[in-house]
Length: 297
Image (cartoon, rainbow, N blue to C red; front, side):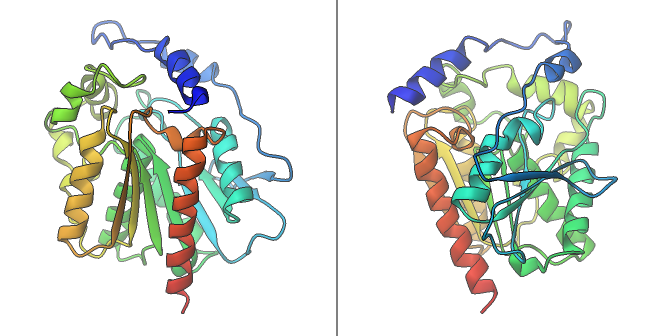
């Protein structure tokens, strides 16, 4: 790993803590402490049309008819479009696609299914201004979950699906414990042995909701999904989610590319300054280019 990654890893590891079911953190205070990140020079940041919350990022020369729909992560408990500007701005500037960066209601104040409902509302709004073959959808961690749930919801509603999708270290199920949850709990600087408990307790609330495909998209019907690009590290907690989802997609005949990196942190591509992130994001951009172009031929 790069020295920059090692420094970031050790810094993030200092804030890692276990979840106590009987003493919840003050999630509202934690969110209030999140800082907005700076978009790269030359990237314009505007608001989304009301009543939707989020940001629209653009860069001169980007095609006006094509769009990346981005859904942030944060364990369904935090994160925002403003806190991800360094990543979404990178997509706009370096990958040359304008970005629709969605905010959605967060737990514990707004448990499941508020988040997938909001993301589907964003997608419906996007379809009013863009042709589906000109849309790519991407999200990391919990955002990767919401990418998959948005595709499932859109398919169930009969909406046209986007040209392609990217899921970066997605969390995709809460029904069982996979081997990587045990084997990589000590090597993941963000997620650990209490992650499933925290999601079930604060986001799902009802154990039966773990059986809903919109909460656990790994168990949904992915037939007809657009081509999917996945990145994950082999040392992170959620490694098996990506591996199993890629296997499920391929079994359903969905074109899928899985990029596995070694000894990197969870959702590393969103830290755009990392050399490893730039490598992964370049590959994602090439994936977008290929399928957005193919969809328009």
